[in-house]
Amino acid sequence: QVQLVESGGGLVQAGGSLRLSCAASGSIDSINSMGWYRQAPGKQRELVARIGRDGSTDYADSVKGRFNISRDNAKSTVYLQMNSLKSEDTAVYYCNVNGRLYSGTYLANFVSWGQGTQVTVSS
Image (cartoon, rainbow, N blue to C red; front, top):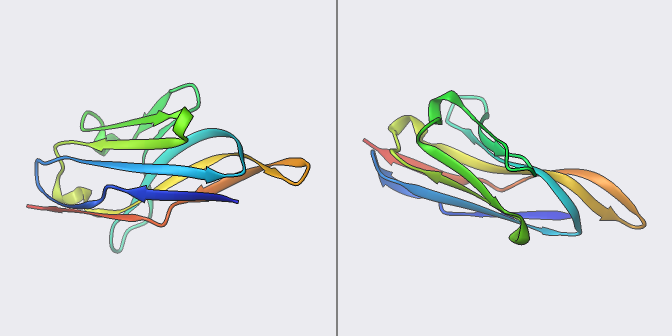
């Protein structure tokens, strides 16, 4: 089993910054990509940013130049630095991690989601 613990959400004024963290733990053999998704009320969940094992990154157009994703492989942790926040960034942010875990004598692929953390940007 893999557990994800998110932190760092909250209330911030427009133009402010927040940093989200997501730490993975459990019987993990290796982690491939780590990412952040968000879901605003009445909308579908969407990709915000993701980072591969090699450090390659992918961002939603709406956050390019404002958000930065990074990871600490030694800590199995992914971060999302969010700057110049806008009211439209208000959403529940979910961490997503995939990789391989130990399952008995085998290695199995896994995809895990965090519990979600609320980010609210006031205008």
